[in-house]
Image (cartoon, rainbow, N blue to C red):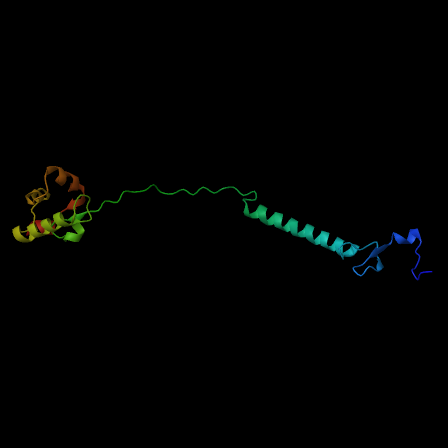
Length: 149
């Protein structure tokens, strides 16, 4: 006779082989190494976490709040003006259509021929014609101090 142990059929269902081939008994309340109490704890904790994440998402995705409309003032056009007898060539270059060469010509003419007596005197500068003068006029001014000189 052999030395093997004989196990009744009813008891064989409760045994599971190990890596070494020896049978071990499985407990009915263990799944993936977790007891029934562990599984309940994980389910409750997971449910609470999902609830908190849902509340967080609801809060930061407008969560019932109304959009606030902010009224702003309309944009205002800024008008750059310069004194024709005081402005240097850099200030003249700030005007549309006045480049480096023309700005230096205006300042050189003012230094050679004296201050301008009116805005219309700018037409004595080479490169400033009637159309250019009309385009620049809203940006030009003369102070009363310059008119007395």
